[in-house]
Image (cartoon, rainbow, N blue to C red; front, side, top):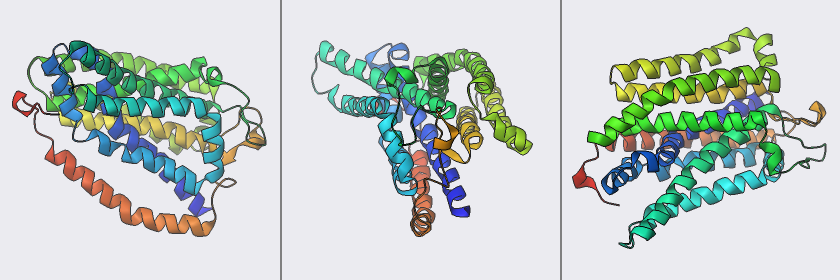
Length: 338
């Protein structure tokens, strides 16, 4: 039981790390046509995340791999139930990656505009769909005792799911503007800062609405009421959100970005803690829920994987810390390379 519990929270932590690292580059892409007024602005936005964005996807692959290896039944049911949404995310991420490489291959405004549009779509679509998917997991997915999904893509586009999509998009956009404030200068930085300040009260309002909606649309609060200490997770998210605004007012952009990261982690674990021990709850009947205990791999598999994680995750984290430290300097016009 201890192994399953450990892996449950490792599963949540890896998703949180992806949302922190991948979230800001999805946020930058979602703001790409609005903050990128000139070709120089757009190239600066791409270069601000360019050396790091592909490395951030490691956590997405890890999250998928952990789900497959530690909770294979959850993987099978999740990827069949959410197949359409996950394929849309996959195609959007592929299009985005290709766009970074293709947009400069021809000196034709129409060519560049096509790939700029793909960067925007390939960023905003995953940001929203990740939120829709996780909000629906918090709410419960309509699958039966055989793990067969009883719905369509549009079933996921319910009010609570869409609210989750808006929340994730705002979190990532806020995160992205702060990264631009760290790495850019001049008019682009000023627009990024102004956008961050504009987004913050909207994000606050949507976060509060989401917390209230979760009371009525989900069973997440049952764990919180049974274990009041769990409310510290919500406090963590609130502290991060308030800290983001305080640090923005002091123009401490790195601290604001880390506070934003804390908010994202808090929001992710709000759902993870509320779900425990369910990883993939059924909205049809609680007896069909896939939990950390009835859907996990064998104890031997979990032990071997835990050893691998203990060895390699610190290596990946150390590499990413090194890379972020290496590319923490401002992007200048002289740096404009693809």
